Length: 446
Image (tube, rainbow, N blue to C red; front, top):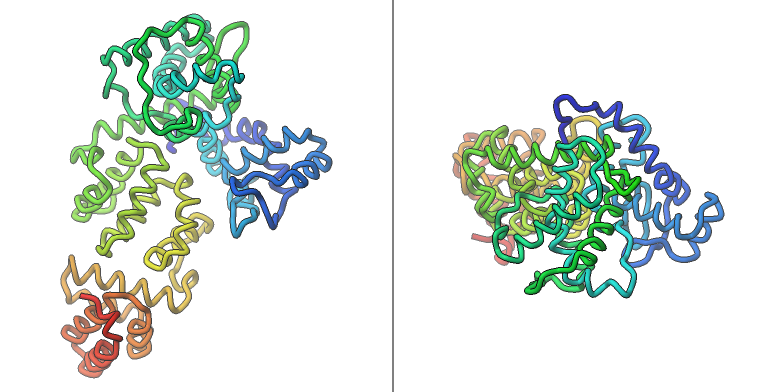
């Protein structure tokens, strides 16, 4: 997320985030490699008690710190257990990584808001999801005021917003939420993914209860402070709101207007763009929808038959950044996505340029070579297959072709046949043709 003009740089904001997340860092380092966590990624009871004893925390505090560590990326789930995430290694020296980690926590504030008392959960089943949609208005108002705002003013602002929504005036009028995970988080609170309808006016007490829950949730992630029946954005909160507003401006200013399209349409349109404008479109498209939904749509697009769109989908996932990491890590288990996912993850964890040869084994490298050649075959000049061969064969094209035919890629035969038709070296062309003929019929593809 860029630093807004006139706002503190990461070097000034990162210490605030580090102090707030100190317990999350402590428990991440204490845990090291854990062999087992529960199915939601939470600590097992014995581990939570052990963490509490070792770190002088209550069991509840240890569980809270662990939950923050998961959200921030200080720990990562893998193979039924958990271990240190790349962000933990960067925590003390990379201010940008710290701010990006805190931003993920801000995005997920609804997950950390206190659970309402049982007597009030009926109210929340009706109001909480719609109230979260009003969060951008409340946060923007707090940002503009730049000082304490009495709770009663925020209550009136929330009440008006809910009334306008109930009467239909607000339908479709709210900009992209600066709380991308709100929709999925609130579906868990409501126990349903359907949007509940409220046909009767809500009581002031009900709205006040929901506002209190919202402000406590935003305070729990360090976005605001509450005191003397008033709320005020913290420096981190001001930074986050301003940065989210800039994302929305990026959405509004995109010339091509692809933000309303689905992922396949976006990627197909961006296939003709140079990298810079394409990244701007990806950034706008991702900012315009909940992060988890954007990532899921891009991965679905990447699973399709068009290899060019698969590569572009992972370019868009690079723009999505941290929120995509867990889903991309899971994609390593899918053959069609595995090489792209491994490279994406390596780029996230490596300070320098990433070479596919350093990340991919021979089988994954061969599969990726066929896939990218298929993209050239479908969308480019087939003459480009010649440098595609030279760049990957290291002077041994026969070895490359043998690996390609054994890769299991459905386009291997058609790619090798195309290479045989355009390569100027007769011996290389013959080797490509022999490999194409030897591809098993079931893997010849189209």
